[in-house]
Length: 319
Image (cartoon, rainbow, N blue to C red; front, side, top):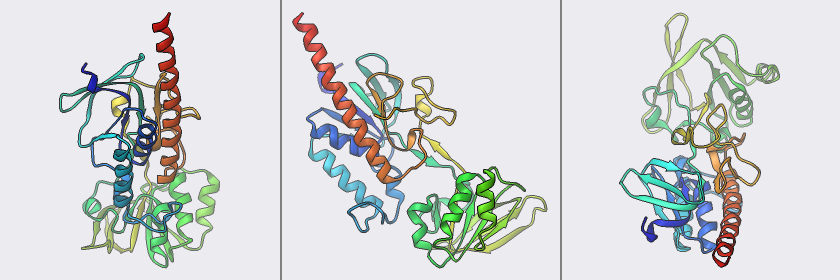
């Protein structure tokens, strides 16, 4: 392996967690490479407006990602996007990665920040209207629907809890669920049913979204009768699960039953020298701010590991 292809640390994923890790690592004078299979910024760039980032009144996800990218590069961090990992070896003091462009890299430490994605309905109009009336995060976007009528899709704990949360903003919330019962804890079900601003459409599913610039209505199909009705809505929040981007890590590192990376309080994983941060880890809350916090901790822990490794290597040389 050529020396210029070896790094102190490689970060896999250029969302807020990965970019934060890159900023901290490169500022600590550690040779750092960030890799991402998509656009720099991750899910953050899909957010039209971020209004709850401390110290920043309002900013688009794309703008925030651009600033983070600029910061990381200013400290010497190398960033490669639109490239995927073909093979990864995490064991041992030197970890190796083979990329889709045929290039291979090694590093003494890896920080995994591949992020994740909200599970989608996969129906016509969904991709077009994402961020234009369709959202997957009540905390992020609920305020934008103040006084409006919206739909919440799902029947688990998160769906019902988020639906209740959305009633702080919306004039009306209609929960659409494919079964005749919920998969949530009883207290969550009772809280939703007792909320006078929430209606329910059970045994039904959304089959299409309509709107030119923004969401205007949805088609709802009754799964018992097959009847499809058009339902006017200013917004739709989809809460049917979350999918971590960890397919390439299976059999490589410890994951939980939801394929999330298991981490300790310092973001270390089951393999020495490998850390993880952000939405791909086993955690409850997924926000830009929590990802930034995770990335900070992972970078500081990795920096400490790398410093200890260098001391250890020097001692071996002098023996």
